[in-house]
Length: 169
Image (cartoon, rainbow, N blue to C red; front, side):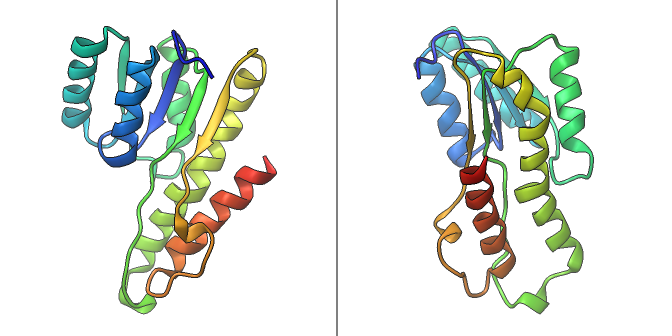
């Protein structure tokens, strides 16, 4: 895909793979919508990308582990009159340790972020993406998608879900 002047929305954009996506896609000519919890970090990334690549970079602070946050993000994108060409669902987290050693709330937030918000973002952006001649969705999984992960059962299950959902979509 040619990313020149395409607008790419990246969740989990403040670090790791999401941050790398931002720099690589800006270098290929993409405009960006960066989404994460860390506003100040994203603002630094946005300023750096604008200086290096002269691309439009929009920053939206959103905790996608919160129920309803995916719909809120979609509304924020619409309110800013932005149009998304590529959706990259990268946000996610895991917990490593004995299953019973974590609070149930940790697992609920993990499931909300790693699966529910990902599916909801695909759902709310899909019609807009399908209407474009060149668009796409990238759902970031993990090697945990392929094999059971001792001491990370819920994380592994969420990533297996991401793989199965993405292949079916």
